[in-house]
Image (cartoon, rainbow, N blue to C red; front, side):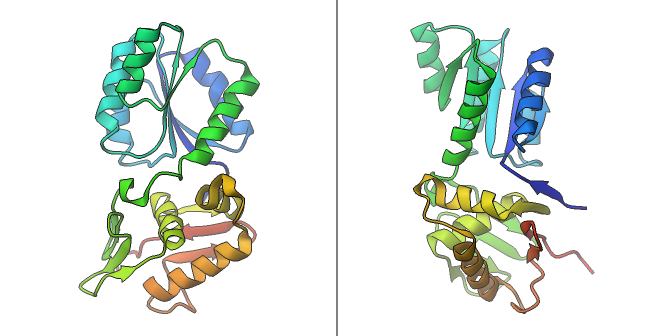
Length: 237
């Protein structure tokens, strides 16, 4: 059974269970999927198995662990990293930014401002250059971010447009999940407002012609009526 992704997938790492419960509830109310971890070591193993769009770090007791986590993850991911801290000390903030944090948010923070910050950063998570994104491979299909092309088995590489690449990378990053059409449009076209469901449908059509053995009966890029699209790797026979 597929999981429908509404407004993004967030990985929340925190040593404050009470804050976790509140934040997970607030984000779930906005249609976001929230994964949680209580230690940096768990995040380092989890992010490869459960891709996320945004990392939220909330540490009360071990600020250095938060910085170490950011330094370790930053070379591996292009996703935004937010750090919630309880101080406005400039030296502390500078250390965080030097460690790869995208924004330090000083607590306490109102519920409305918290959800607004998260929503804003989710929109920005797909403004990064394509070459900064991870390469993805499932079965014989490999998506090369640096060259913005797809390779299937031993066949020649197929070049993708910027929009084709971003749509395919988003769907492959959330393999097996159903992504709402409006969410895909928001992530790919971002704040420009230039995208719509018709444009997305055209991009999906072009992608199917490039990667599907039979574009009229797609097996990889599937439409879920009334919901959106999903990428399903081929199952072994």
